[in-house]
Picture 1 (cartoon, rainbow, N blue to C red):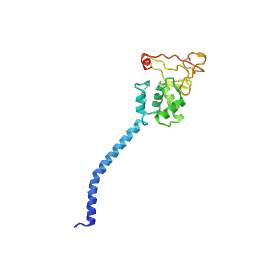
Picture 2: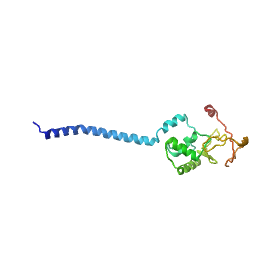
Picture 3: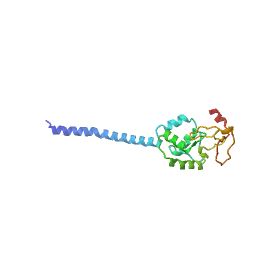
Picture 4: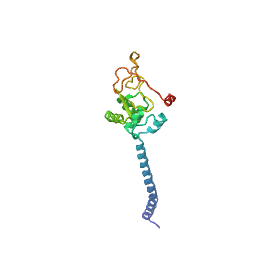
Amino acid sequence: MTSVRDFLKARRQELQAELGPLEAKLSGLRRELDEIERAEKALGPVGVDEAFEMIFQRPMHTPAKGVLKEGTIKDFVVRVLSEKPDGLVAVDILARINKRFGTKYPRTSLSPQLSRLKNEGVLERHGVVWRLAKEKGSAVGPTEPVSSDGAGVGTQGGSSQLTPAGSTPVGSTAVRVELTDEDRKLL
């Protein structure tokens, strides 16, 4: 007849024998979860890819030099400005990035990136308004002045003067926009 102590010892060994393979499986599952978490972090904020694909069926702009790394502030700037051909002021670009992509970039993080994108030929600056640089075959520019929220503010006295290249628009400025056949199809 076995004693209680012998019974407990035997049962402990049985449980440890069962537990070994389960612990190995659990360890493998934890490693896989860690890999999934790293992959999700590499993708950026939740929903960025899905939102981007729904909004843009084709790329609106390809940087002149190099490729933008996805999930960076520079990438977010290009995505936001792709939706606003008339451009936006820096504070509105930042607000849209932080809202749309769930980030909390400070203003001081945006300014250097805007300058870099301008130097790379990706952005143009017209006064305080930033917009994507012109691509071959099209002229990208506002058809009327742009307010801080990106909405047109109209022209004063019906003026339609063009601003000379390299100058800062003052007052009301209208710019002629030439559309390609491909752009017209999208309208």
